[in-house]
Length: 138
Image (cartoon, rainbow, N blue to C red; front, side, top):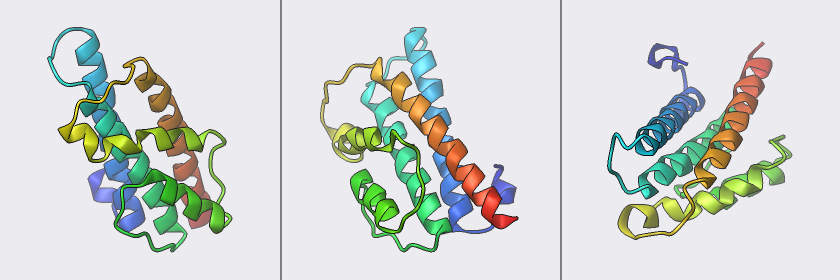
């Protein structure tokens, strides 16, 4: 989705989620190659932001009002309570919640190898959200 394709909040969240996911992928590759020195929590922050925005996109598409929170568990619960279909391994994204705020200001000790796992899950979720939106628009 390009910036010019944004028609509503659902599209905006999806667009911003893709930017955060692409940012985390770019930073991870640059970090792995030794091209950039960063706190790897920054990679996880963008992964968390991508997850949050993808879930907000899906909820927004379904006309479910979301509170101002960064808690991925709250969004997943909203999906379940409203019988909104999601990917099977979505609960693994709850582990990213600590990076919404703490990851910016604290030193969290996680394995950088987990970033690839989260990237794969977020790619699955992105495809699911895109298919759901496209299917229901037609």
